[in-house]
Structure formats: structure tokens, C-alpha cells
Length: 209
Length: 421
View: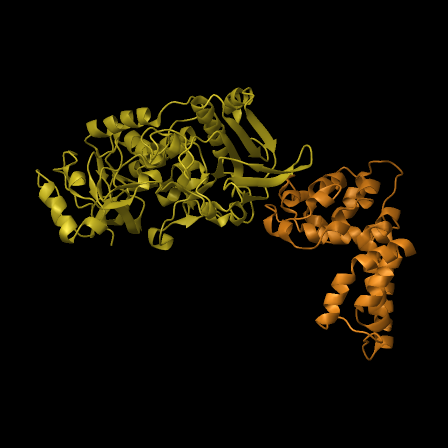
């Protein structure tokens, strides 16, 4: 069993728009958060981001919001889920802030803390479908997990999205990147599930959610 | 290696830039003998290559001229150009210093008449203009050189080219046989004023300095604006020679960046404000955007910042640009995030100037010189003043010209105290 003394303190909540304990919590508990105080707000990360225009805030502003203790605004942001982990910001950051790590971990915090906006994002839906396929088959079945992802938007949208992707599907079939028939699966799916369950239990006890 | 005679009271100054010149003049005018070494062919260093000084916008040639006069009139200063230090032994009061002199191929008989330059067609990249243009292979380092003596580039110092140059000299000043020589001197104290070099902008890969002639660094901008520069003082786009009317100045290009120079180079903010002033002086319709993290105009320099800020054609954009692209028309396009409005911009410019920081000059073989450096490569004496060695000017850390002069005066005083015992 994981040592309870090493478990993470719960997310602070003072019910206000600004809560400086949230900033302290992030410095301490989010992967790379200890480097957040190095940020000098130069804009190199958001300016370098290939999909920066898709983000509501972008990393620079999000980091300032963390410092200001804007917990709800931070954890409702779409910035974390739009990150493609290209690491351009990490390479270019003049202060050595591991931007990508921080965003990835913040995304996890938001989902686990049950922020509705987080659950609705494209990336969260996608990750969930991906996770389902891995758990079921030990593999990603392109057809089934894409279908599951599309269905999370409702049947009408799912059909629309599927039709729009037909040419890609045909291309994948042609080049044998996709197949007909039963999904490929690994031998020990049962063992894999046990591993995943154990990991989840450890994570849960550590994060205090 | 050290001599067995009485301690020397001569002070050696290494580096002939503004700090070295100041230290040498101060030492000599106090009545001590001084040897001033310069690795290049003439004194003045980076300062001679500036167009103007901030904040008063006066010409560096003015101050240099006064200093050259002081050197000329003082018999206690011995100037050695083309010379660097290769080894140091001994200790305070009794250093044995090995000097290496590279050939200039022109002796003291030179009258700077220029016939040698007329005799040759061969050209070499002009070091005075950071290679922005070429100069004849027999050249005067610049119009204000001290000593006022020509140099013959090594490539032209032999064969037919050499013979042509030698034949053109009426004063028998060309010496093609000159070779590198080593000599040894004894001195009581050493002032290291080895200065700085601009940080290599090509290392800032996302700013593609190597991929467009219209992306230059701040010291090149000084040359473009200088009347004795490659464009005769007109700020023109290097790609096509047209006036540069929409210009971006990028601050902290390499400085305050843990991937490059972790420290603030101190001069670049004021340098860029000065560049904005050059542009606005030349073109009534010029638009200048200064991209900055924060403007560091300390104490009295704040007034100059305010003055430039009052110009409504100079815009301050609080942003460190992410990268530079090349637009369809070949102009550089700056991409980044405006941190006040959070707007993502892609803005084309005629000319982009990277305010690269100051890196310590490369000094070879530090242990042989008994030198140590701080974590950034700036020279620090191993044991402080007890070493009998002192750093002056930017050799010891980033400084502007006035602070360099102050630090050189301080070093001169310390060196005098060291040799007096």
C-alpha cells in the first residue's frame, strides 16, 4: 500500500475567484510546478505554439492565472487539452520551465477534480475512447475506438463525422493499416487489466480525489 | 621563468579597447610605466565600431581622439598592436609574460598614403564592418586608426600580390618576410581588459539569422548607421539596398536565456532605443517596433527611454517573439504572442535587428595565463587583489562604456597599489 504520508493534499477550495493556496498547491503537486516561479511572462511559449490560436489562454497566460490563484478558470481552460506535446515551448523557454509537463499534469488534475468543461473537451473524449480500446484489447483498434469517440458526441454527429472520414478509412484499408474482422488483441488482456486497476488504485490514493 | 632582479613597477594592460586605453592612460598619467597590448591592428576596440553613444548620441571618435592624444603625448605608454599574451608565470611584482606578435607586414615607416591599397585588386571581408562588406587586402583598419598604419592581410602577403604591394610602397614600409615572433617581458601587475564579442546570433535557431540578409544583429546595425560603414551611414536593407522603413528590434536575443546567455547583457535595451533613434532621424516615415520582455534603462538612462517612448512611430511590443519566418515577398515575418492583448501575431518587416548580448572575448588557454572565469566565462582573478591581476571593463562582466571606464580607472588604481607594495 502506498504510504499515506506521501499522499498529496487535496485541491484547496476557498470558494473565491482568487485562491493563492491553489498557486502553492500547483507548485508543490503538479509535475514541473516547482519551476513555475521561473516564468518571466515573455510569451515565448504561447508565441511558439503551433496551435496557439486554438487555445483559450495559452501557457503563458495560464501560468499567470495559476499565480493569481484562479483555480476554476485554470482548470476549466482548454489550453491543456490542445497541447500536442511537440515540446517546442520546452526547448525554447528561456527560463527552463517544462511547459508541456505542467500542461499535461494540469489536464489530469482538471479531469480528476471533475471539471465538467474538462470532460467535454475533444481531447478528453478521445483519451477516454483510446483508454477503453487499450483496456479491452491491449491494442488500439482504429475502427472501434474512433467509433466510440464519435458516439460520445451523439449518434447524429457520429454519423456525420464517420462519413467525413471515409476517404481516410479507405486509404488506411488500402495500405493495410486497418482491417476487417475481429479486433486484434494481446494474449494477457486479463493481466493487463489487473495492472491498470492497480495503477488506478495507487493513483487515486496518492491524489486524494 | 621569473627574473631574479628587483620587482618590476611596470603595469601590463591586455586589450586596447576603451577599458584598456583608459586603464593605460590613467596608470601612465600617474607616473608609472605601462605596456598596452592589442590583439588587432589598431586601438579602440568595439567602441571604435559604434556609430554613437547612448544617451547623449555623441560620436565615440571624439572621446577616442582625446585618448589617442593622451597616449601619443605620454612617453610612459608603450603600445604593442598585433600582440597577445600566450603565457604568464611568476607572481605579483614579478610576472614573466610571454607575448606573441603576429605579422602586420607593414613597419613604422608607413605614412598611410594608401598606395599599397591602390596596387592590389584582392579583397578580404572587412573585419571593421563585421564582414558586411569587403576591403582591399592592404588596408587601413579604419579612418581613425591608431596607430595610423596599414595592414596587409596574410592572403596577400606573398607571391605576385605581395610583390605588387611591396613595389607600390615608396617608403619601404612593406615587410613581406615578417613572421610571428615571441618575446618575454617582466611586469609588476596585469590588467585584463580583453572585452567582449557579440553572442553568435546563428545559435538562436528560431530567429534564422543565417537565412536572411535582412536579419542582422545590433553591432551590424551600428555599422549600417555609421558614416564610415558599408552603406555610408544610410540604414538600407542588406538584401536589396532599399531604405529600411519598417524595422523590428528584438530584445534579449540570447540574453536572459538559460539556453544561451543566462545573464542580462545590460547594454542592449539602450542600444536598441538608440537604433530606434537612428531610424527616426533618417526616415520621417519609419515605423519601429521594439519587442521586449522588460526595458532595463537603469537610473539616468531612464530619461532616454522616456524620450524614445514619446515618439509615436516607435512602438513597444511586450513579447519575446517565438520565431521568424520568411514571407512570400522575401521579407522576414515575426511570429509570437503579444502578451498584453494575447493576440498571436505574424508581422512582416524590412529589417529585423537582433539585440544580441555580450559574451566574453575568447581567451585561449586560461590556465597558462593563470586566469579563472566565473560561471559565464568572465575573467575573475583567482585570489582577488592578491593575484596582482585585475579585470577591467567587460572582461569582468557586462558593462556599458561609462561603466567600463569607471571599472578601468578602478583597476588602474588597484594595479598601482599592487606594484607600489
